[in-house]
Amino acid sequence: MSLSRHIPYRRCIGCGSRREKNEMIRLVRNASGSIGIDTKSLQGRGFYLCSDLDCLNTASKKMRKNAFLKSIDLEGLRAWITRKKGKQEDGE
Ligand SMILES: [Zn+2]
Image (cartoon, rainbow, N blue to C red):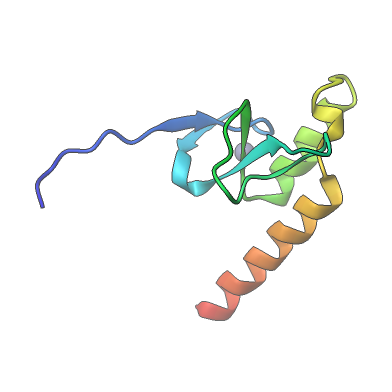
């Protein structure tokens, strides 16, 4: 397979660094108005975050100054990242 593929990069709303899209968590606003993890590839304005609690903490500090980001489901995200991390550690 020598097909060259464009790898999309996205900027993390936490640390601000750019990473490959598929390494990141995509966040979207759902029907109830809160921003959570996009598991269904929903359309709309998306945000990207490294799957890293440090980035989530940084993002949560920024959120206080940003009305839009304020509606992020912080607890849900924190639980999700923690769970994902646990799985990775089990597998190694
Ligand atoms: Zn980050």
